[in-house]
Length: 416
Image: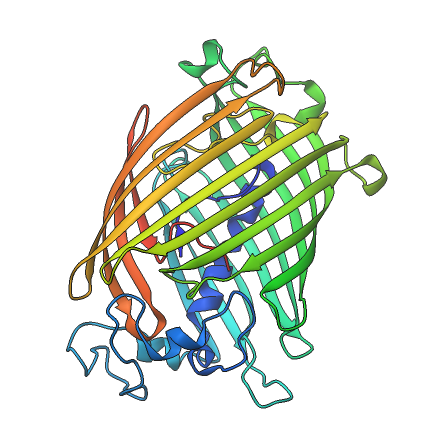
């Protein structure tokens, strides 16, 4: 479902704020009645998943009321019953394994509010989370978040507020001497993300709008400032609206085995909205899952992000692949592709192989100051919640400079 890095979003500024988005991962883990739904909104469990495990093909209807941590069907460790019975509030703790900030964890309390639609079907749970976290390099954060559904699950709203102190390294924008001699800096955003999504009829399409507001403080080690950094960027405000369109045809949001996910949007930051800079970032993501047999599952993801006008460095697109440190390769434009093959090797265990490639550049016509990277990953998974199709595991990623370790819960390409 997610790789527990500090963030995975379109820019440093917005994605460090989106550390609070970790709670969206936990939203899906507490969907007690989702597997029994018959009228499922886009992005939630499908009917097919409610009856058949997407990995083993076994029937999931038996023993759904068991309170044991072991599945009565096969005797293996299984958390399905625990997830079925989650209610009220629960403590949470999830790891961070982003190479740029080191190992750490985020934790807190999550409060769960359940409701029922007019036709009697259960709604996606509403959640409120408060918490914080930190890593070994001094990065830390405090956050709060809430999600709620309205009008029989047609409208979903999300609110995130956070204050972060993130220690990173500036590798320059495009090719240059900083690529091999990065300068340490600290990014301190204080802000909020507000988002609403409306499901279009009974289709799998959603239209949405996201608003991001954050005061950004940046401090670099030593002086003078690195090249390509403008003094106004050290204390500034980002304020922008992002219209979104989303299609979700996956058979499972946890560890999908087939289906399509598509998301596109344009983030517009403007002084009229209170932003310190006028700039735009267009982005599109396409993910496709294809079963190649009963035990082989192929996935491919393509992402592109284009920034325009006076984009501050902390909002520039960057390559976001396993094996690449956060914001190591950034530029005005970015494109990347990832491919992953999962082999259901034996019972609940599977092996994963992955390769990715990405590039950034600073001139759309000439591809000037371009940089590229190729990565590879190998990993192992265990199906920890069979009725939810949820897999847990770890990846070792080989990048251009380092070898990185990641803990995975569900798909590395998680989209709620």
